[in-house]
Image (tube, rainbow, N blue to C red; front, side, top):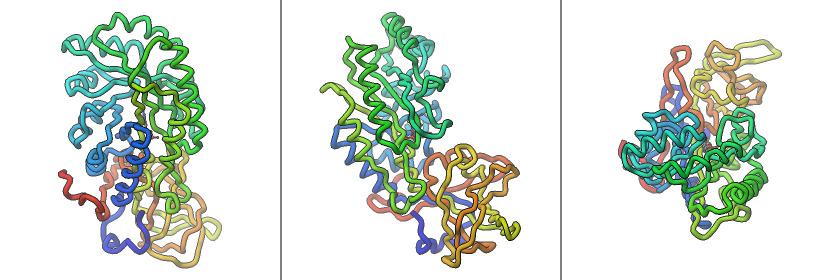
Length: 392
Ligand SMILES: *Cc1c(COP(=O)(O)O)cnc(C)c1O
C-alpha cells in the first residue's frame, strides 16, 4: 500500500493514476494459494474485478484459474496466460458468439443460468460434435448482508436458476446430448465480511444438492466469490482472512471424495493492492463546509457513486494539522464525491492524495464520461519474479 514515505518520484507523475503495490499482490496470491491448497480447493480469479493485463498475467503466473462473465473476458484471460482448461464462464446473457468463442477455445465449464441457455449451448456444441461441460448456477435465496447492488443470491435477483427452473432443466437435460452436467455453482454477492453468511450458503448448498439431485454424483462444485475486504482500515488489514473463509466451507460444505470444490474470488485478491492517486486542484467552500476538488473523478472510480462505498483517503504530501473536507471530483454530477466531511491534514492546491482499496472494481469500471481520459496504471517494485519479466 502506498505510504507517504514511498511517494518519491511519483510526485512528478501526472495524476490521476492507479498505483498497484505488486508486493502486496504477490503476498495476497501466496496466501490464497496456501490457504486453499490446505483443503484441496481450486481458485479462479474473477476477471471482472480487475482486467489490467499486467495484473492478470501476475495472477495467471500463480496458477489460478479465471472466472469470466463475457466473451471478451475469456479472450483476455487466454491472452494473459490463463489455461483455457481452468476458465469458467458465467452470466445471464451469454450471446451466441460468446458461447461459440468459448466452445472453440475449449474452456473448462459454462455456468448456466437458464433453461434456454442450456438448449443454445447444446446446439452449438452439437454443430462442433463436442460435449460441453456445464454447471447449473443455482439461486440459493441466501441473504448476503451487503449493498443491494451487489447482492445476487436472493430470489428477486436475476442470477441463477430458481428451484422451479432447476426442475425444468432436469427434464430437458437428458435430451441434450452435447452437454454434460458436471456440477453446481453458487455466487451470492460481494463484499461479504461476515463468515456466517458463507456458513449459511454451505448449508443451503448441502440441502439443495440433496433435494434436487439426490441421485447424482457431481465431481464439481463452485461456491463463487464474495469475500470482502477492510475498506476502513486497509493498512491494518491488507490481506483478507482467506484462512477463515476457506475453513468455513471446509467445515460446513458436504463434499464427496471425488468432488473438487472451486471458488471465484475477485475483490479479496486485488482490492487492497490498488490505490487511486490524485492531486488537489482547488480548495473551495465556506467556513462551514470545505471542499477539496481533486483531479480524479467518478469516471476513474465509480464505487462511491454506484455503491455508496467509502474508501480511506490519505494526504501523501503533508502530515500537518487536521481539518475537515468533502473530497470531490471535477465531473458534473453531485454523485462525483469520494468522501464527505472526513478529517485530513490541511490540504493545499497541489497536494497528492491516495484513495486506498481501489484494486477491485476501480480501473476496470473507468469510463470516458465528460470526455475525460481513462486513468493509467503504475506498478511498485516486484518481489519474487520481477513484474517486468512477465511479457506484455
Ligand atoms: C463478481 C463475481 C465474482 C467475484 O466476486 P467478488 O466479490 O469480487 O469476489 C465471482 N463469481 C461471479 C459469478 C461473479 O459475478
